[in-house]
Length: 78
Image (cartoon, rainbow, N blue to C red; front, side, top):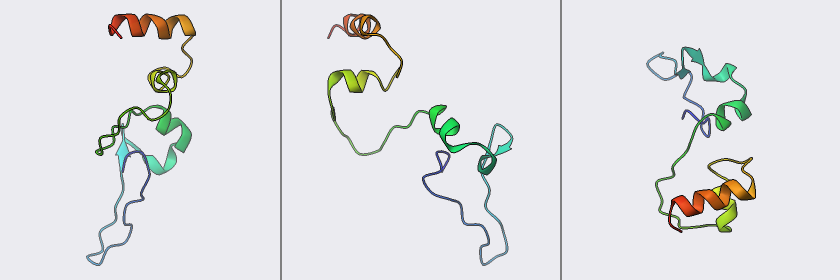
């Protein structure tokens, strides 16, 4: 719900309204792109390596240089 893939139910049968607040701010008032870039998402289905190794490494830092990627691989003993 925090990443806004779904919207909360607004007017339920019991008259209650659904809202989600992130750091005290209604997430409806946060730009979607900014919100999603600020949050990590781990899906529940186990998916192993979709795309190249480089593409997967760039999930951790989309602006990483080739040198930084190489250093990350060396630290992981990969």
